[in-house]
Length: 101
Length: 339
Image (tube, chains in turn brown, purple):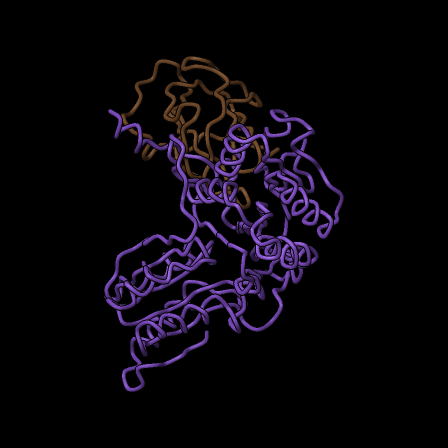
């Protein structure tokens, strides 16, 4: 099954975030609890961690890019070789845990 | 190619636009120093000074105690002695403590010394309601609009924060630079190459036919939200973002009102003796009677209760109501509505 990784929320007082750093390249498997990406808000860093195992397949917003809450950041899948759709539309959101520090 | 470079932009958080302006001016002019509470290692209450202490050190980026009168006094004195201080007063409410050095000394120094001395100091502060109650929410910029010798700017976008702060730091007299708490979560495009926004020039944010809305700072966004709603009803609003409150860009306001023949002033501060009252009167001095309304805070302190805070300060719906009311007033051409 394929998933989209979205900017998690709600985060109080946050409209938009900037991708600070990806912690892996497409092909990497993230176990539950592992840090996938760090996002920058106007005053804090958001650590986004996998809540279940998944393979990062395609990054949709590189470091330095901007996204609003709920917008897609990347595609992930259970199977590292499953065909990927063109767009993240309609995909289920990847389960994540996030912490604002 | 050159024109592409000139028009290229980079998206920055509001706070980053401020930091960039200060960094560039500190690099350009060794007389620019930054003083305020938590401005050094902490990088400012809104992180708007992050990196400056590390880059320029304690000789140019200095923390102060909670002592606003002394902070502004220090800034005015250092300016008179040849520095170009940027004094950060976190909340505009506490600017009141420093009005004596700013108004009685900074704004009058050039006049009092026959032009021999000047006080090129910028007092930067943050106004507006955002959940912090009676004494951390006020917009008192109109109090200071009748101080000769004092300039006042209030940006609404990261690009204007950047360009106006740079211009303020190059002024030869005191400038009050006003941010708004609700602007900090935002981000926006800022020119990649150095860009100064002239003090005293407004900007037309939206072209319209039926009414001119004049606003500054965060209220520009409220005006834009109201204009979107009114457009769905067939009402076309023109929006002028003042950017500077002193001096006022009266020519641009009058040019717009002459076309629309209706004026709505919008401010988050109190209506009596406010920005809007001044603009409404001066526009009519130039143009004669026009339909005019003022929208501002209700005449109560801003509560820390979010429901009461929202009830007190202007929102898009209140602006829409005022616009509908003024445009439906046909018999008396000068209808002064306070909302």
